[in-house]
Image (cartoon, one colour):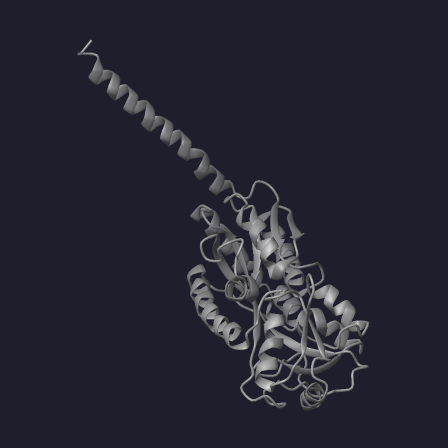
Length: 331
């Protein structure tokens, strides 16, 4: 009996190693063959808003590049937290991507007392995809056309100017809070489940103004249905060169930029992440994709995952300070 034990141990060890090796093959094969089924991009805001518009443009490109269907799944609510929580719980296999924003990954942690996901630990950053100016727009029936007129009216009628947003904690919301603080005016925030329903109420004059992402507002500006007051960036937008910045129009030092980026679920195998990043970089470099995003007022950005992670860290510190100084809170 004793003479058999070493052999049995060696046999057991060999069997175990073989099993481990066999178990490793499917993972490698899965990474090599990725994608073998449709990919879903979770968009944490409603259809028709900027996040949705960008996700669909990029999704169409990924579909051609990867040879699989790409489906956009809109899960709006809680400033992007509902969609973020859903995506964070998805299998880490590369088949669920998340279209994150400055709100979901740099603002919400400071704004909400309790987060349903960890922006850093639960996601693997792939690349920022676009920077987008916010555009201060008003319903044409409102009694102001410029930044100075808006400030004067808001000071004369405290609490009567309502500004809509795509949700508490979004860049649209914080752009308004920053304006309130710097211009020293009392305006009322009205959060919606996405930019599209907010714009609908703005068009109907149910709310007076929005600091909306340019892609979802510019079509209405061009159609004459919304009046452009100013852009929130430090420089004027090439798409609306005659519209001043908020800083030059009366609030020196004001600047707020929205950004959007693609994430995978944390724990996704590196070969899959590499393949996704390479595909995204190719799509974003395509002239037609750049043109579509530029037409919406956006600027394409292509980064390494490491560069994107470092950028998020800087943005989190910046917006955390804005939230604290403005006293903004999630509703």
